[in-house]
Every structure is written in structure tokens, then in C-alpha cells.
Image 1 (cartoon, rainbow, N blue to C red):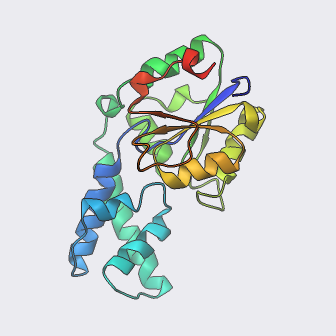
Image 2 (cartoon, rainbow, N blue to C red; image 1 turned 90 degrees about the vertical axis):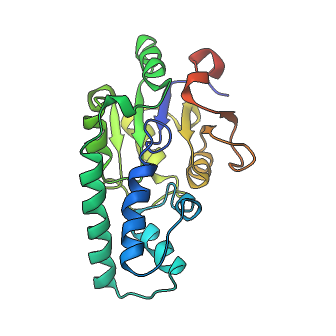
Length: 214
């Protein structure tokens, strides 16, 4: 890869596992609407914006709602999700993350968050990592969700680094595609049989080091 000058991280599944909090809130909403929502269904929502996730949920339940109803349902789900994540703390940081962030800081390599989540700042504050990031690009900052590369291109811009000198860490297919579309080196955190097109694959951040990227 080109010279490493900056790193961009997705949040869910890379820094912290918020999938369980999302799943709990979506499942409760689905049950209230009269159908079940499984963990396999939840996999389809990885890296997807809130409204697009709701549309997938309604598709699973074979339901049609107007825009006003959708806004109300999305708000209800988010209220429960925020209540759930309010109990998070640093114990939920995934293995290897803190050590790698420390290594990046020790080597003066800036890093940013690139997440579709509008709750990313809340989560980072709860787990004690908010002040460590040089930039935070979240769902409040972007117009286009992944696989559009906007979130990562904005991150590179905030860090004043060219896209080809950035490494992206992702656990979702849409995020891998977004990173590649941005012209960045993409490391997938997950199964290569499921996640396609990344430059490198790791099972967890415990396997990552600057040396591996050089």
C-alpha cells in the first residue's frame, strides 16, 4: 500500500460492539409491529443508516408505512437504543483497539471515526475514547450513507491526508465498498468468506499493528 499517513475507523463492530444494542431495539419494534426479527435479519443492517434499516425491517415484516409513520418508528427505536447505550462503559471497547490507538498516537499517525451512526459521539464519550480521535465523521455530518465513500473522504479531508494514504477498518460489506470507492486501503474485521473485496482481513484488532500495514 501507499505510505500510511492516517487511519479511519468504523465504529460498530470495529471499536465497540453496539450490534447487540441495535438488535434489542429493532427486535422490540418488530415484535410490536407483529412479526419477529432474528439475528440473521440484523446482519442486513450492518453499516446501514437508520431509515434504510427501518425500510429493511418493514420489508421483512411485509409492511408499508408512510413517511410520518416511519419517522415515528425510527424515533421510537432510537430512543430505546440511546437508553441501552447509556449504560455502556470502557469495558465494551473491543480487544486490541486501545493498544492500536496508542501505537498510532506514539507514531504521530492521526485517526478519525467514519460511522453512519448519529449516536457515535455519545458512544465514544461513554467508552472514554471521544478525546482520542482527531476527527469524528458520523451520521450527522454526511448526506450519503455507505457504500457511498463520502464519510471516509470527509475523514481524510479533516485529517488533511490524501485518500491513498489512508487505511480504513470496517466490518460491513457496505463499508468495505465505501473505503474502496474512496481509493483507500481497506482492512476487514471479519470473515473473508462473507466480507468481499478488502485488501487485508483480521479476526480482531488484536492482530493489527503499524508494522502489518507497512
